[in-house]
Length: 239
Image 1 (tube, rainbow, N blue to C red):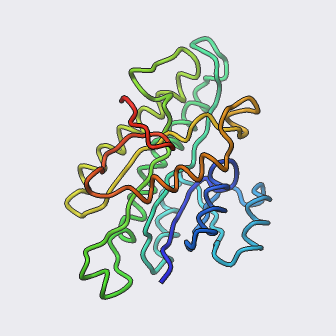
Image 2 (cartoon, rainbow, N blue to C red):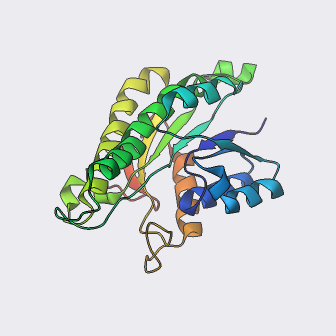
Image 3 (cartoon, rainbow, N blue to C red):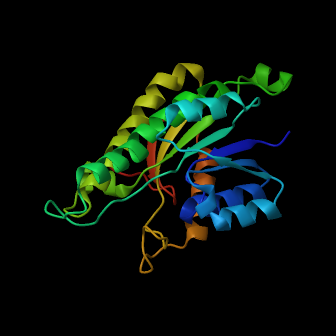
């Protein structure tokens, strides 16, 4: 049976490219996007590939996420918490940092990870076969964070985004400890500075390179390195 990967924030950028590559690599992909109508590239990709199933999911709406999870009856091997937003690159006095924008960033980048994991947790321990029951193999969780959330590499730009990614990494570490007895490995990952709508055209990493590196890191994630914080290249990062 093919392995299943569920990814949030699949509508654009790195999420879209991870969806494309995971399907090419033999995964059944549950590609989740907040607004499918605005995700034309994902919709087109889904029509061309039967391995991809498109799901309308808002990670900030836990009740809806729980209902979507209840409708899925099989195991999820890799849960990728990729949905994220950035409200502004300016510092303290940037007017982009208003209360509604800050709430949106924190709800998406932090609470969204928490709600997604809590909703789909039963699918990470579900077994699809007797061989899986005997091996004790469980799913794993990949949280897409950022080096911008590193305390040791703090900067003055995008303070709200930085804070949200620091929290996401911290949450991944907490989940790694809590879920270790259930043999669910958790990792936090920096995708690089990627040429996307968020990263901008001057970024030094292509979506293809980042996605390929991230998927390779997810494959390496296991109970011996759970709680890891690393780049798409496998570089260990400072918290």
